[in-house]
Length: 201
Image 1 (cartoon, helix red, strand yellow):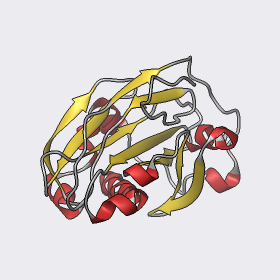
Image 2 (cartoon, one colour):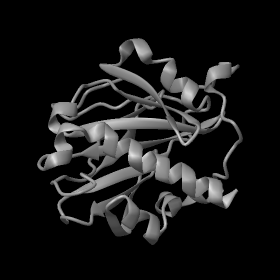
Image 3 (tube, helix red, strand yellow):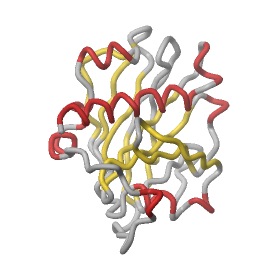
C-alpha cells in the first residue's frame, strides 16, 4: 500500500482508500472522499468458517449505485440527510452530509475489487494500526485501518455481505461529542446498511 503525503490510508485488501471523509452522526465537521486502486484485485480460495456470512445479501443495486444503501428514512435514523453524492473509485463511494451540519459527511461503498470479501481484510491484519472484529446485525465486520486517526475522528469499518464482497464505512469527525468515538458512528451506519439489504432480500 502507498501513502500520499499526510492523507490517511485505509485498507480494502488490494484497494487503498487514499482520501476519505465522513461524519459525526450528531454534529461535527468533515470533508470529502475519494479512492485509489494501487494494485490488481486478489481472491481468497477459501473462506474461514467464522467469516462466512449467514446468508448472502442482494448486492446488484448497491454495486451500481452506492447511494442506494440507505433510504431517506434510514438516513434520518442515523443522523444523515439526502441527497448522497457519488465519488468515483474504485471503489465508488456515496457521501452523505450530517443532518446537524453540512460540513460533516459519511462515505459508504461496496468494494468489489476484493474478491475474498471480508477475508481479504483479515489477510491484512498484521499491517493494520488497529483491528477490532465486530458483528453488524449478524454479519462479520471489522474496525480497521493502516493509520490510526481515531483521535482525529476518522474511523473505517468493513462488513462482509457475501463471502465474496464487503463494504466499507468511513467517518471523519473533527468536532463535537462523537469525535471521541468515531468507530461507534461508523458501526451504527454499517448496521443500518445491513438492515436495509436484509429488507431487500
